[in-house]
Length: 347
Image (cartoon, one colour):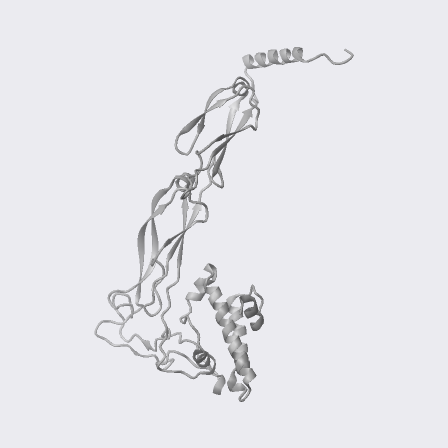
């Protein structure tokens, strides 16, 4: 069963959000559950198709980086028909514990200078973290004391609503599905079970890093549910623009301004680079807009990839205000150019 077919079975568009998919699944699960249609094998078969379609879509969503955050916040990572029956019809199996799930990924936006992204650099960042309290092990309970049963769910971890077979039970908000609440708060965390701290990291920016690059620090995200593994810290790179260079792929583009005399006579000019400078032998009569290329002076390449080039566009500057001597020289040049032009026909 492909993903497109799964969306069709649930009756939602392929681009539907996760909440819409969940709502539609709940409706169909209630409608075609075998308990509502005793002796009808078609209803049982349709129920299994709906469950299979929902599971396939959820697995696909879990592989998507954007949907993964929402998915990992859910306390269950697998759904069986037994669990669905509990979810929608309120029949609880006390022997079935809540499952572990990984913690959420955290995001940190890091702005780096243009040269640092191209040449590579290291920098320190400080990220606010919510960590389990070591004094109480994350329980929020003071040492030597015992938690008490949650009065809202009576220790079941869920709160059931609705009459008869249609009553269903979401996780209890007061105890978070644990069935127990703190009776005597831990003095270290005031009963929260976690502490807010700043954690410092040394981040290595590889040479050639592009805008939008994500650097993953494994295990430095949010704490997992029920001692599940922690998530990751995603460091998202934002590269500052440069006033002189523009990156295009692995090439660096720049514009160098020369005087009219330099363009006409030619000669050696210095061209700045990210690390030092290069010398360009400007040919005589260079026109504005002419392109020169320095191979290997651009962005460092990756594994088995050559370094990019630095591409230089020459811009010939026209003076707006002339000194008396400059004006005389240009006037003489204009006169000589006029004499060198061929006479007009019929003159």
